Image 1 (cartoon, helix red, strand yellow):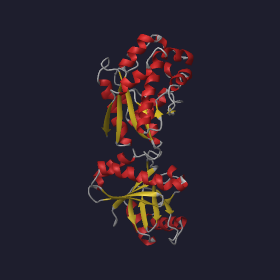
Image 2 (cartoon, rainbow, N blue to C red; image 1 turned 30 degrees about the vertical axis):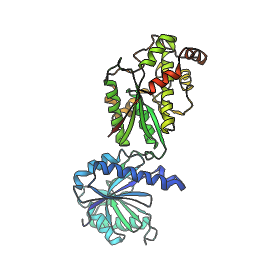
Image 3 (cartoon, rainbow, N blue to C red; image 1 turned 120 degrees about the horizontal axis):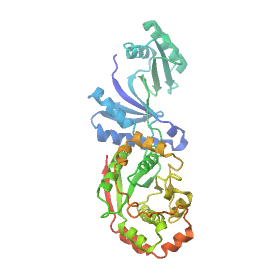
Length: 395
């Protein structure tokens, strides 16, 4: 074949229906792709260009074959991409397209084929259907194979775009969603368990830049719990490259709650304090919402009564993408995104250190308010805030 593989064509889906805002989302998607490639494959691409509802990545000739797997891994973690293809640039000339399509497939093993043309450039003299017929007839003549439009062994795609033409054989499924950063930023409460990393994944998929906050009970718990959440954040960073994690000490607050309030309300009161501290950071750093991994009824703190009692402590929106998920659904997604093996490592959660024998499952807000009157919440919050540590986690 006279042409060399020199282009990756990235298609999007949801972005394409954004109307007047489409340019904004396209720009962020192109920026995210460029940042990923610049970090991992800096010498293997020439440019990234938005063109007629697509994003084109122009490749260098250097080590293209050895880098295709790396490109695939990077682009399947770039939210906003519906599918992408490794393509050959041809010419907007039907004779050239015929020859290039034949060169592309002639050494492949196939009994049936189809041609699928998409003509975005309406000045091209042939319609998509006419292109399909012309090139299909040429391939039949050259190969003696049959056309099968419904279940072909090979599908040769052709895209006529502006002044260019591309051909390729496969569409690789992307992660979908919206480009990270297109829909603001939020804080995810990252516990170290299975659920919260999956919640963070769904936040990222909707285009929300996500930083993390983790509450620990050191010195009563080991540093292993902090290492674990850093590892989880690092795994999730393949979808966004870099993130912050706020490490918040909770042990002193827990001790005061244990000594001064009813045992059955401990978990509710811990979580209300955690939300207050998170909201303070969020408002100071311009995060627009909080994400948690809660699912209705999964544990005692996640009954509707207890969810209501905990979120009552703050005004900032709390988003719960897993609220209707079964545990098995969450586990499957954790395995898919690569967080499961880390999440199941043993660790001491901040809430398990001082867990009551019989936690409240149907919290009454009047009882919660009465218990909190015994606490100096302002002082407890201020002291914890003074000892928060912030770290940058890179992929």
